[in-house]
Length: 344
Image (tube, rainbow, N blue to C red; front, side, top):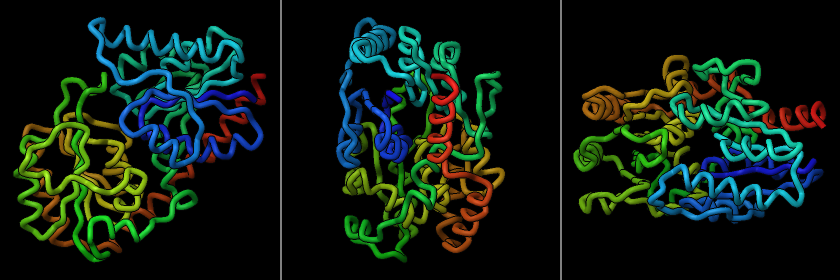
């Protein structure tokens, strides 16, 4: 098959990287990207060939104009050799452009609150794959699977932690390490949402308990916490997550990544996400705080976890979760091959 992958976010690189490596043994694979944050660095690290369709930009015409421009470039770059199949997370452009050709589209999503994106994507997609904890019923196009996006690259079949990552932060395996993620809140489905109230206060309280705080941020940060900003290469962050004692953040993806690695995760956000609620209610690996006093309550829980930290306890919770969940990359490959065989 001739297969096109579109990538708009660093997490999409991780999600598809093992599937792309496997598929390119027997198929023609092309990867088109929006040059955002660290996407290019990750693709080059994993030796995935790619074409940049657009860079980060602001437009007086707004998001709609930027999306149209991106879709035009995707059409222009695929019209000479239309693919059999478009694959994407979110997948607005992929689902739309597939309709210009005799192509199909498989869209993966785990984000219920991306209402606008979903409304303009789902009607055009041929298949929509969601974790079985996804709250919405999309209809006959939907295929549910027992897994999470993050298990496409952090399942034990795909990931082995590298202890040497601790050298970047001059830490030992028994040290208390806390990772904090600050979001920019600039994605269309995040506008109007909030997380931390006072990040400086949060850092001081965690450090007072002997924790080494490592911050990764999409946005500007106060000068008082500059000493905490991560120096760990982006492609080593999952290794650090594995050895960390705790994750606290506004990023849902990193909360889920930490949880599936067996590191307890605190999610501070006015958002509620189906996969994080399941990781809390079924497996006790995530704690969601979304109310008015979310930071106060989240810090109370964080300090309690640090004071009574038991690594074996969290790894047992992870094993219980893995008993019920699959290697998501295997599902991606199965769906692509099955859909291809039945459709072309």
